Image 1 (cartoon, helix red, strand yellow):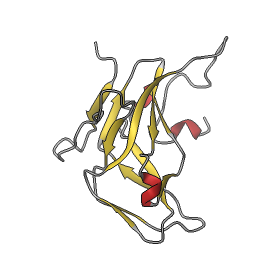
Image 2 (cartoon, rainbow, N blue to C red):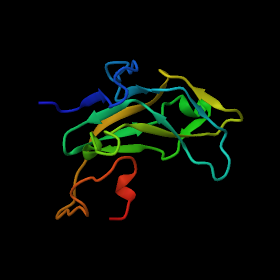
Image 3 (cartoon, rainbow, N blue to C red):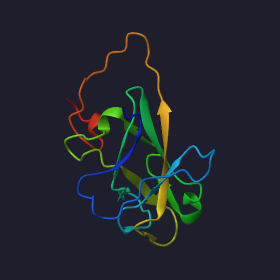
Image 4 (tube, rainbow, N blue to C red):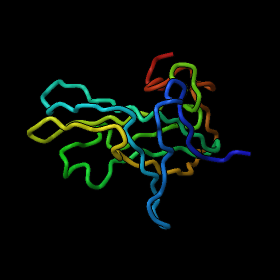
Length: 154
């Protein structure tokens, strides 16, 4: 039985996507690469974050999630995650909208455009347990969409 891991998302099977790895024995995070070349424009008021596709989806146990975090060198290069951290819920995997495709959202705070090349490590994924409060009752029992879908009014 599979517990947690990464797979290539539909549509990226033949695009030489590398499954994430930990770089050392005690690394908490799995390094994730960009699946495409992307230019992150210089930040200006009103600009939306740049979404960087990974070509990956991830699965985990029901009481776990995957936390997406910036690399420690990210700010040094001028890019910061727009949402500080990303959360990939257990039920995001294989969803009907985008098959669970993981994207990183970045702003560029440098004074020049940042070019991210396919294969560049853009962030890390860390598997985490979570806990529920007594008498927990979710508003919706089944995910109906992909990226950002838990914000939608039902």
